[in-house]
Amino acid sequence: MFQLTCPGKQCIKNDVLSGLTVALALVPEAVAFAFVAGVEPLVGLYAAFMMGLITSVIGGRPGMISGATGAMAVVMVALVAEHGVEYLFAAVLLAGVIQISAGLLRLGKFIRLVPHPVMLGFVNGLAIVIFLAQLKQFQIPGEAGELVWLGGSQIWIMLGLVAITMAIIHYLPKLTAAVPASLVAIVSVTLAVILLDLDTRLVQDVLRDLSGDPAATIAGGLPEFHLPMVPFNMETLQIVLPYAIILAGVGLIESLLTMSLIDELTETRGRGNKECIGQGVGNTVNGLFGGMGGCAMIGQSLININSGGRGRLSGISAALFLLAFILFGASLIEMIPVAVLVGVMFIVVLGTFEWASFRLIGRIPLADTFVGILVAVVTVLTDLAIAVIVGVIVSALVFAWEHAKHIHADTHTDKYGIKYYKLKGPLFFGSMQNFADLFDPRNDPHEVIVDFADARVYDHSGLEAIDALADRYMRAQKALHIRHLSQECQNLLVKAGNLVEVNMMEDPIYRVADDRVA
Image (tube, rainbow, N blue to C red; front, side, top):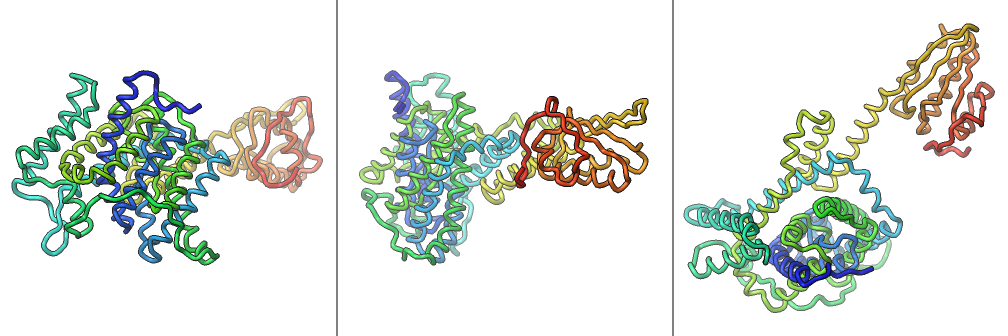
């Protein structure tokens, strides 16, 4: 059931005002990411509008904000530089179709496989990335075209405005929660800069610096339907498909991880598969209406949540306010001091970083600490998607290594000279060697019984380990009996032959990850 916002006028007010705050913060980032990708500012602004509106209406996480993002922009650079913006629109369109397919196939649930240390590294690395991105606002083009740091009174004015903005956002909620503190900070500091005629950089200055055009502006019209002007043939598909797959993967990983973070903050649960479809529809529409596409934006999502935005109306309001800025209010938005937006994002950084992770050092396994730091570092050096993938792989390998040590056997020999191995623990690819080392066919008695009642075989490698054990005892001309092994394992053991003892009344029933037919 579609629910625009929570019941009550207060919820509507919070969502609308929070949406306005988010829209103000969206403008410079959308423009910056557009230039990163090598496209016009309006392409980034249209993407922020369309992604924000569509995902807010049909996505799976109310209150989460989507738009043009840096993680996807860096993937687009090579495609735009080599083939042009029309191929970008085609790639974004195809990426949207892939994301919709992922949602229909219910692949969103796999976000549950991301371990908590990876999530910690993700948010910490992202906080660092957001912080470093704001430092660029303290730089201006020099005489030779290179970026140089602000100096003189300009740097002190900007630092002072940043500090005042952060102070308002931090202390105002203690006095009143009637309006979002971030919105009050943006409006009040902007008015102060205008009235006092302070010499500080404005959003308009950022547009000029990024584009090199003194007349650069965010003003424009409505997005228009536009089929990508590319040849519809296999050659085009070969060009755009690799980019589309990467864009779809990066977008879904960042969106689903942001959704998990918002779930934790709001103590609610989003719908991952529905969010995949929402992101996919948003990117598909972008490809058809001249937008650069995008995904969930953790910084803007946190601004929205911290400003009181919880319902779908907050994201819809942000998108509509952004469109209003493009159509009617460009001159007003371009008057906002950059320092104000930097202050807002610094508050986001402080709220995003998991400061408690420092207290966990020495209290959690060293491997988990390593994974968290690794993901944070890779996030800063590359991008979020690669960092998460690396973190999941390393966590899986650590898990396999640790559990490989858990297999062991209790042994005894009865009065008839039969030796019993009572196994305990998992048998899989990581524990094969430890499993083999438990047995001594050369010195064992003529008859041996291996009991799997307290053990489990998890994959093909485990089956091969049992096959190899049976071979070792056959070469030693000794009888091996295997008990309490599941029927599927018994059927898959092709070498053990009649050495496998079948007892269907006691044997467990479970499935093994194996590609052979039973």
